Length: 209
Image (cartoon, rainbow, N blue to C red; front, top):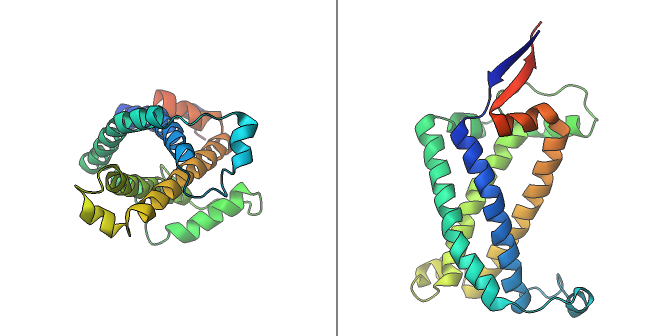
């Protein structure tokens, strides 16, 4: 018999879907800034710009980046506060078994292992990934402020290893977001339609014996 049960609260779904376009705009505008002043030319050599006829749009990139970063920060802070107040953090924070179980989850997703470790609302791999993305957000905020106001926040700049180091760290975190996007989408596909539907509606259909 099929039953319907609640899986994701309305607040969690809103934070998730608001964050997606915000992070996309932040990555896009950040790349525009990077193209105007590349730190690691090996990633985007000169022929790359000529091949795709990419213009240098530094002012546009900075305008979008510095505007939407505030919405990104506000959404992230509200998300963290909600998980603390509601107790959702208990479902998200990894425990001492999570890293071992995450490896077993990976083996299961690769069809190397038949059985998957016991899981609650989120599996071990998801708990690690979702916790890591919060830490990455904090890292982006710190390095972003160091780049945005290097004089006013000179102590943050020093903490990051200097202005140039802060730029590289900020860019590497952006690469981390892109990788998270790819892995997250693959996980959603592997989990199936029922899991995706629960992120939209908040409910999932389960089979009862």
